[in-house]
Image (tube, rainbow, N blue to C red; front, side, top):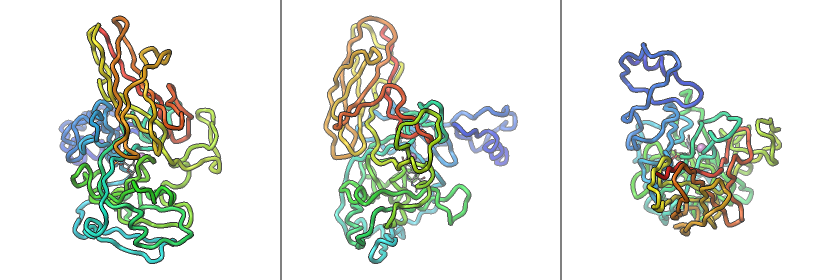
Length: 405
Ligand SMILES: Nc1nc2c(c(=O)[nH]1)N[C@H]1C(S)=C(S)[C@@H](COP(=O)(O)O)O[C@H]1N2
Ligand SMILES: [Mo]
């Protein structure tokens, strides 16, 4: 049976969405070529909500349907998973350490997890973490990479120490420009010397108050697939900068050159290009802050409302390093926009909650579109934003279908 399963994983897994394969797949051999398995709830990683959408299982790439992102603080079971490799096994949390090294530290230093928890000032922040490729499936032409819908975003409450406190304790040379992380996940090839991802951020972002080395999420241990027992959390920047299963931070005298810092990974063209065009490497820049974006988390798309009743809508909005200033909804494809109530963020880099009520002029089918504007006056595009070769930063408006009956 195991053989069948492996066989099917090989054959059945297209480059696009791959559903979860049950472990004992009776009649697996009878499944027609090219037919994907349906996802079976108990196959999700431990503790994850059964209605999350599996894009791939090796590595796990799992997104959250938008209506399940309705909580103000995303609960552990609803946080998306974006793995480039395989989560470490047999984690020895009592001997877990974090080393800070690299050419721009004065002397390398290793901290035990216990020391981190007890010897430094502990901070808690709500931080939004969005995959750089969230909403990639909305680009046309399609690009390579996981075809995320809109659910590779979370805003949980992270607890840990400030990276800046640890860097200060270690001692940083004047020539430091960047930090990079290394995690203990395994490369898909199984080669222990290879890392599946090792990204970083400039010193300025690394030294922000909210950049945390975190061991707790929502007051509990971090879920295994989200980086247990220790991770970097860099709110507002591509999720890929928030290293999971954190083992080492390197302080660099140049832009970090780890895995996925090169080529066109996590980069966008410096000037607009026509969709599908090729871009020279020197015309690409590393993504920093994520753009303004919002979601309608209630109601779920497909809601049926009786005519004459107001519809209550709510959701969240965020804008990378910036604050969201205004939030609007439209039921007439942007001809008119209605302003929503928008709350302040709990802290810098937390998403903001919005709500409103709308009336519908008559029975029928509607689409409700949501649009946020940041404190720089930038809004979400209704259609696709600037196309880029890897399909990053799609912040076009989220919309839901509603029937008034
Ligand atoms: N060690 C390690 N850290 C990692 C990754 C990874 O594969 N390995 N994936 C990154 C990417 S691309 C994203 S979007 C976020 C996702 O965090 P989450 O899985 O906790 O939602 O983790 C980042 N940190
Ligand atoms: Mo990501």
